[in-house]
Figure 1 (cartoon, rainbow, N blue to C red):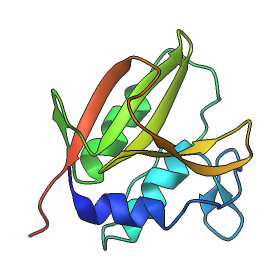
Figure 2 (spheres, rainbow, N blue to C red; figure 1 turned 90 degrees about the vertical axis):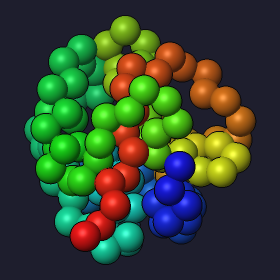
Figure 3 (spheres, helix red, strand yellow; figure 1 turned 90 degrees about the horizontal axis):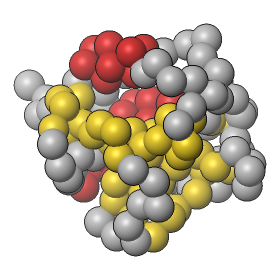
Length: 130
């Protein structure tokens, strides 16, 4: 786990939720939360656009993750893609004792302690900057 990304994510807790939100001042969704945390670590993320809350195809996430400097790993990733249900993928950022994510029902970015309640589909580690 990269502490730098976790700290950046924790700084976003409390930001309002907004579907397709990419600006912490106006609101973030789960993709926007990951993108903003990456920006706060000095990176230039490529975030997918034009998706819905419900979908089974996550190919847009895969391309954007690679372009954003994330490397697919088997375990312990900084960024985690879970399946909240069979048609709802959700991105979270791992911290030292939980996860930061944009919670649509609570209408804000939140911290969730402990293990995830959903199955992990994929996870990525933040690549070292050159």
